[in-house]
Image 1 (tube, rainbow, N blue to C red):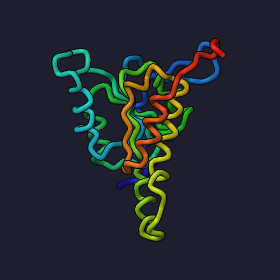
Image 2 (cartoon, rainbow, N blue to C red):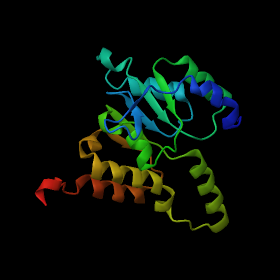
Image 3 (cartoon, helix red, strand yellow):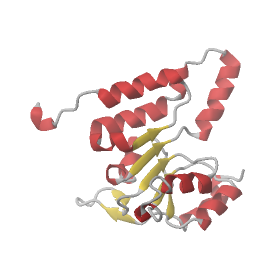
Length: 188
């Protein structure tokens, strides 16, 4: 694993196109109908191939842009995979923050995949070894919070969102949010 700084210069070449919001405040990616992956899969090339094969009979998925939201370190192999893939971009922001979801234009994506971060996996393993009783739901909390944000602010994206959770206890939090009634602000 190389440090993020070593590969940042090369990752900049895969930065997504950006545009300012209408009010000129925050930038958002200039991508629509894309696939957003919050986190970094173990094998980017295999993961992207699976995402793009979602509908084998549809050519529109073959070249669907993929936006990886990730601010952590990137190995040389992963960097090579990213650079070799067409229409794969890296947005260097924390992957599961609400502001990153907005910048990544999750509300206009075809699919959203929320992955647990590698740092969280390592921390979880260390804490489980140290305490033996670390709360299973806390290990998946960042994904749960990001999913809750999508449920509350982008309800049309709920059915297009895939969450990686490790513990079955976490599913209760995802199911509760997905089935919760939605109210328009004008209804209140």
